[in-house]
Length: 184
Image (cartoon, rainbow, N blue to C red):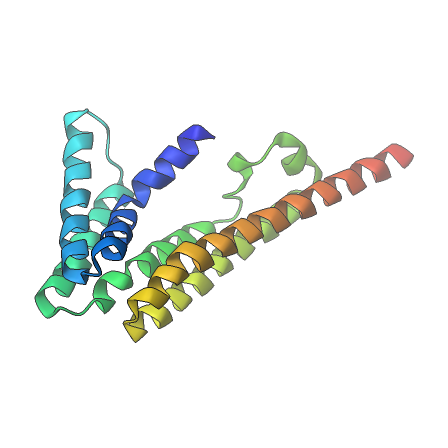
């Protein structure tokens, strides 16, 4: 579990850095420049350490540089604010692959309620698309405080709520199926 949180922090480092610098300074241009430098530094550090960088790392770096660069050139924060939407849309597309969740769940779930696992995978994809659309809508306003609230509270809260709902639903469904099987 610790490795999962480390990977998530690494994946969202440029967004975290941007948000922290912006909240500390109220300066979008400075926050954007530091986030770009941080993303580049993160890739350089990984290469020095000999870590293999996947497609998503390079794609994320490109998005940070392109959208951050557009923000720096135009002084319009909406470009960099849209970055999380691209990530959510990309992840949503990946989640449309049937059975993507199977490797993340314990065998008792995958063996007992596989049809619900497939449905849940599609529900996660839909959630990512909705969150991406919401991010674009919020970014289009250019309101930094609203965006900061959205990415820290709404994006995280929606995923935590979805995880909790899925956990409870899977637990109840598995227990129900096990009890039904024991009766027969």
